[in-house]
Image 1: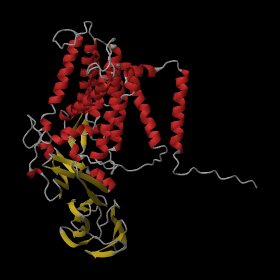
Image 2: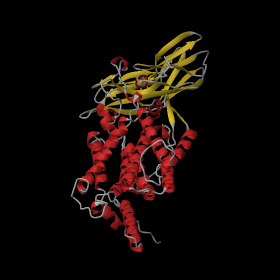
Image 3: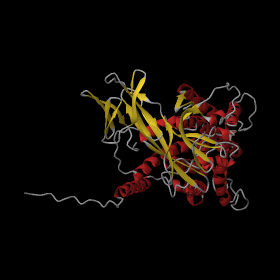
Image 4: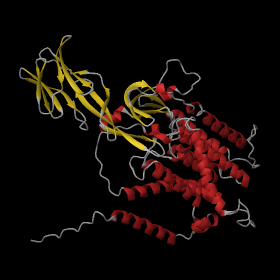
Length: 552
């Protein structure tokens, strides 16, 4: 009998899959270079010092350093500190300065750094490290100094970042406003090269995913998700791309250059559609959002037309005069829209919370208060000045609430649905030099034919859990021997009450696991996560615990 030899297994520590990807990619790039007669590296070295976008790399290093060390991702890779770095209010300048350069997760910063690398390389190539005019020597002035021109790139990106943070609506976080500004600059100055970079960004994202997750196993699971477009700071992205377009037009005017209008239109339209600039929405409160897809679709086409029209001009003039020339009118429109979108953020950023607007009976962590509540007025939205706001109108919020009057913070950091699905969630608060986590735990009993009954507990690191919220009691949709059974959440656990008509005939704590109790003439049995009621040979499942994260 012939036996096959066992196949030798690769050591688990050997990254052979990643090595295969890198080897194939590098081999293909070398082969393509040998097959092609073009030498793009020569043109890049003529524009960039050693052919490297040093300014873009410096910017990326700075943003990464903020994420790793200021936000603590170096020590807590899956839990960077975010709350104190958001753009909460003009009365909290620290957040205004840090909001554009901090990120909410590893995926968030990875996407923005990839966009910065790809689009920033195009923008820096257009800017250049060397003088463009013939006969002008380097290092003869600040404008001709390659080192100064390199440093101008991160300085410009920092200025744009602060601008996008100061004039963004709401408490945003992330470098995407700058990424959109870089993209706006690149798509106007080099539309064809920009489209190549845009596609290259997709390839780079695939390569990163293949190296980071070479093999993935997926299965169906229950998750709490919000619409992807509800997580986009659409107004911040819009002012970013408009600012980049206007800076690009100024540079083209200074250099007496004009790109192909049709290419600019196509590049703008492709980028706007792919990046979701059509996702115009408003929050309704309670984790609900309303998307105006029809309006957003029309707007991206108008945006592409206006940007393309701004590059037209036989006389090369960049004077936004109120005449009939398409370019001048388009530039005026861009400036007006940018100004309007920027000024729209001012009322939302003058939030000034008072101590009496903070939640009561919450866990105090430094200057923060953390609690859980449902369907309560959102103090942050109530503090936003709206000229036509009706008296008594409010936006309600539910979930794990984090608030700080010192930092103008009030946010439902964890939605009830997410906590219900996961059972446990962590909320981290802190400042530039400290951080601490608060853990939320939800115990949930699903009652037969009715709403669930649940209790939410909060716990500081190293502390004891305390009950922050109990839901309304729920009565099972069954009648046993003329009796109704109700399950209620209490501060220290769950109770079972038995009623006949309007009279309560028995009430006691929910039985412990694998025990039974006689309550109001019915026998209740607890079998792990299930609660049964028995009478006269009839046995009915009254409730079932949905989450195993906590035990009553």
